[in-house]
Length: 173
Image (cartoon, rainbow, N blue to C red; front, side, top):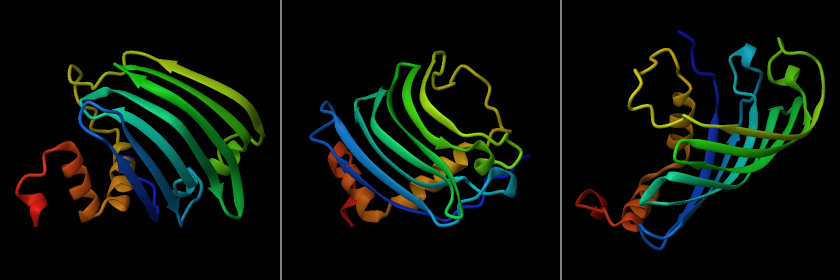
């Protein structure tokens, strides 16, 4: 089975909400101290900053207000991807701008070229997968888990619990 790439992620998240039925906003910043190409077992992401908005009581709609990812490694930049989009009830719509994207800096097996321009990605049928058998060979979720673990600490968990109104006994320590 394929392994997750080697990384050294650090970051922060600022989450603000006024209640379950009000839009919550989250600003996320992640830095990877060990970026590198996929073919070397690394994650070709140097930095990502994103602002996301969603209502806690409506998780089937998430708006990406703005996101910017710096790709490649310090010694071999791979370009910048920035954009915005929306996930809405299993439908995805993303608009991105590519600036100096170099696929060969992301993976040495990719062609040597430079990509600049706009990209629109749409898709549907991307539900939660509850009606599909679990693909145990797909390990991409580990990268998301690592990012969340890197940026969430005990006080942030308590903030989230207080904001969502589900603090419970564990959050009162």
